[in-house]
Structure formats: structure tokens, C-alpha cells
Image 1 (cartoon, rainbow, N blue to C red):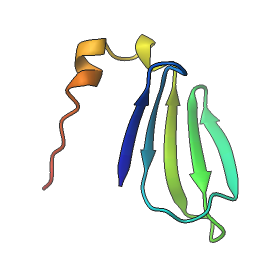
Image 2: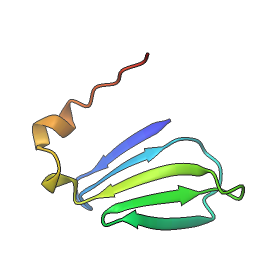
Image 3: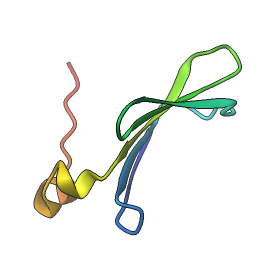
Length: 66
């Protein structure tokens, strides 16, 4: 899994695996899902993240494993 914050494009991207993306769909304003050939979600992109989280929050993303 990879997580990328892109300040230039103001996006946050979660890549779940490395399968080839064959389709993308904006499921809600500013939320895009990427699908592989088997229609499984392999990535999630959030647009306009500077309006959703502060720079401090984005600089210290925390992971929790249960």
C-alpha cells in the first residue's frame, strides 16, 4: 500500500495494490475510485485536501492496525 500527498495538485491518494487501473469513477464530489480489470478498487483519490485537512494533519498521518 502506498499513500501520496501531492501539494501541487492538492490531492491525497491511497494505492491499495499494483494492479493495472482500467477505470476510474468519481463517486462523490472530490472522491475518485480506481478499479482493476476485475472491478476491484485498487486506489482512492481525494481532491481538494487542503479544504478537508490542515497542513499539520497531512504532515503527520497516523496508521492504526487492529
